[in-house]
Every structure is written in C-alpha cells, then in structure tokens.
Amino acid sequence: MTDSTPSPIAQALGRIPCGLYIVSTRQDGGNLGFVGSLLIQTGFEPPTVCVAIGKGRAALEAVRQSGGFAVSVLDAGSQKLMSPFFKPVAPGGSPFDGLATVAAPSGCLVLEESLAWFDCKLSGEHAVGDHVVVFGEVTAGAQLHEGDPSVHLRKNGLGY
Image (cartoon, rainbow, N blue to C red; front, side, top):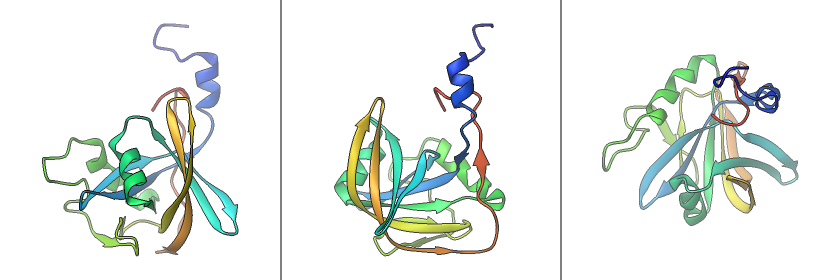
C-alpha cells in the first residue's frame, strides 16, 4: 500500500453509494447552496430527510438561522449543474447565478433542470464527529421528469 492508497476502512466505506444533490438555504437575504451526497430519507409520517453538513461550513449556520433547506435531486442530465458549487463565489454572488431556478415555498432555490426537488422545515439536528446531521420535514416537492437519480462512489470513504 502506497501513501496515496486509502486505508482498508476508507476503501470499504467508499463502496457505500451516495446520491448527488444540491442543497440550498437562505442567508442574509441571499441564496446559499452546496453539493450534498450524505442525504437519506429517515421517516414516512411526516416525510423526513436528513443531510450531513460539515461542522464550520457557512451552510450549517444558514440552515439553523433560516429554519430550513431545499434539495434538488440530480440525474445524469443535471450533473453539469454542480460545477458552480465547487468554485469560489464572487462577493454578493451565489452559485445559483446563471442557473435556471425556481423558489420553493420556503424561498430556498431549486434547480429547474433537476430530476426532483423537495422543500424542508428544520426539525432537529444531531452532531456526529466532524459533521452535523440536520433533519427536515418535507413540506413540498415534485418530480420534474422521468429518470434515475445520479449515484456516485468515493474512492476514499473518509473524505470527499
């Protein structure tokens, strides 16, 4: 094993499939978003999902302050929309600038080209290691077209 080879634990954890999502929230009247992969449905009644957000990320405090978040579910045709979320944003700008979006009922933006979206009201959180898992009751949502969600595997299950 070389220094660049992930440990056996990291390799094993990397085999857990993850979806690809754009998670959005509101902050100081603006729009904030990030690529999320650690998201799961956790309840049926009421419908509830959770997403893990790294401690110290601006999005975590923004979700807390706004009281909610929205999720755009990506498919093969909408994966290209992730690119702006990996780049630094100009002051006063948003990664959503230039993308076709619509406001969910909460005011959080969702991507018009995504496979599906849902809007969530913050219902709790739980700190675990270097992330905080935030729970949201799904209050609105829609499937925008037929297709399958994007799934990805990480080479190293101990990092992005």
